[in-house]
Image 1: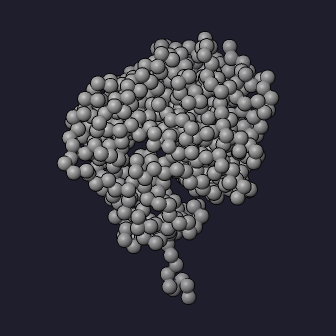
Image 2 (image 1 turned 90 degrees about the vertical axis):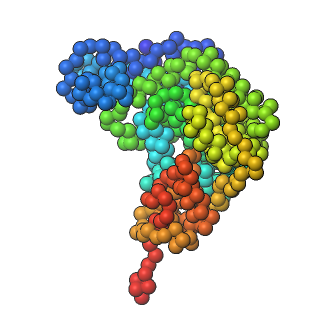
Image 3 (image 1 turned 135 degrees about the horizontal axis):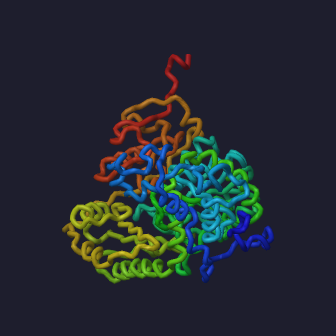
Length: 525
């Protein structure tokens, strides 16, 4: 039986200034071998039910044969609604308000696994987690310090909550086409310059695997008496193995968004939010809980929730699987290091003052000098070898290896070596354009009257949309920022690429742009 507390077991005797554990325990708690919510669903599905409730397929492949082909009969059988007797309810007649339900037990085990004071399961992805976190910021104030290279979902949250971010610009590697992190000194400077800031909101690790000094940044934020929020979407596996970087909540972050499906292996669109330890985390706990409830669906997917439970169990109880995956990741990296054609870009990832470590499961292969662009390499790996890498830029291939998913190294390496070489070095345009100048606040621009204009006429106008080349989804222009010729050209080139996609665009070809309407001459008279 789990203790009747939302706190990590170690926290009961911890003072307000005592940090959370700095790494996962080496011994495995026997309870981590259980998956309370997933097991309750399977137990429930074992009964011969006549289902007269939502969802409308009612657990039968005969009612939705195509759906059974997508999720399988087992998936349909556990697709129960919330508040179902036997899972969320104690008996067939009423809810026992003192009972620890299976979903509560599952979230408590996750909190203990990641060293959090409390954990919430969410089914709208880390994007939804960012919407929750930005709404939490709104409960603290309107101004806050925000890393500029955040995911576009953070900007969506800023817009909806009508926040006023003070941006900290992280390191950019225009050659690789990657954005990385910020330093404690940069955060300290921003908080000093903007003393009314209510929080600090950062990304770590970066999409390319650069890990920021979260412990030092947390100290800076707390010295300024504000909480640190970390979008750790790409580091959901951190802290789960001695060879992996320590996760943000163990390093002093107060609220952490974790995209569990990305590195830890749950189903797509499932994620977690972790609460940290200490005064700032305790100050926001009730607010976080209220906001989570306001965003979470009242018909949350049992399939997604149970996948979080099972992913946690596997990740915690099978360190040998992480070892095996790490071995294959390092084998690929070693082969690249020793190759005469391709180059390991790990030194580039670690080359700035912002990065103190890198994610070993992100392998960045520099294709400059290889006679092929990263983008062309990606297309040919897909077409000829059925190998799909996480991302390609003109200068690099980015591989993402799941924390418990070892790779067939020989298959990948053979395909990489078979890529053709151009006689002349392929053209490699600058990947990331410069920042655009702010003209209006984000929310003011987003909710203002807009008009659609041809791309040539958009230059010099304030954007009405947040536009981000995807992946990684970092906005290249925000609502209220002036569209530069460089950004317009970049976004149009992205849209024209074989796999190009601009998130937030109303016109997928980017022939037109939505801009803030300007008053007509008659309006000015």
